[in-house]
Image 1 (cartoon, rainbow over the protein chains, first blue to last red):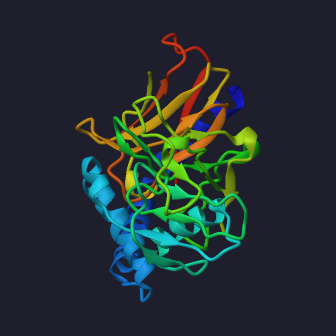
Image 2: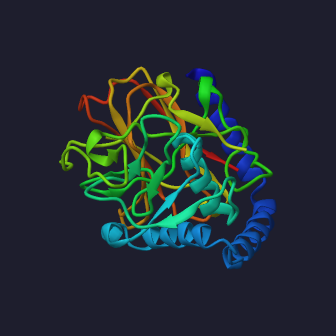
Length: 206
Length: 83
């Protein structure tokens, strides 16, 4: 941890020294971000993913009113589907095909079939799960094996280079095995998706 | 509850995250804006981890790590603002 503290302190000193350059970099990134945000996706499912993300960000408390879900082809895992949603949200591009469908029943945010013959469906109201007190959870980037972020960004999208997406372990009230079935129970304040790197609950980002 | 911050120099161009080691589990992490509203919150971590919650473009102000297993806040916490 001492090495970590020293590393962070060094980074912050460098940051101050480069403050002037950062102003220009920020301006450039804002321009890129504006262009990215204005680029309408031609894929209606990806467009819906982006619209839902914007809606969740604008009003956390009303996330349950967001309707719709996206269905992935058979063989796409829950982790791969969640990564596709994140990439779609942030880039407007789809890694894999997805289809806009109706929202999931009950408190479900994901339909995860018991085998890979079925299709994963993820609800757009809270793709990463939710906390009944605070609302929808955000995507969490992980740095496996104790690596620190380098400060560089991936060329594939606006996330840290070398990061993985944390894949939440959903409580059973937030998941079902079929979009036709509600979860076995409703959620309570104690139900929170878990993130557990020791159980490989993460998937590398491009 | 452990707070890091109060702020990144310019959050629009920074990844905002942290690490936890040696604390009791579970814990959650959240980033807040200047008014104290949660902008992003994680699920419940069950192990030590390095993570990032904010990545550019947000009005990020404070990162808090909420240790739900203990109020003592034992363990080691750190935050980073990565350009």
